[in-house]
Length: 64
Image (tube, rainbow, N blue to C red; front, side, top):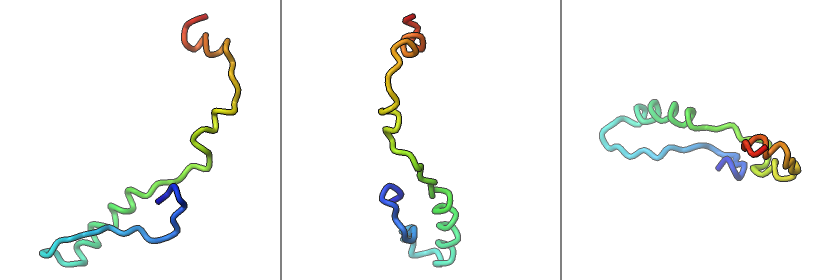
């Protein structure tokens, strides 16, 4: 949902016929809060256009 910039409510499906609905909401709200992520403003492959430094790469890999 974060990937597509979803602008809606997070919903936890809770199916317990024994617990009171308020108990489900009380348990579910922190779970949802804990799992909401901050989305990066960078593309996954931002590094791809950074160019190649063969000398640096060789040194980094211990090939120099």
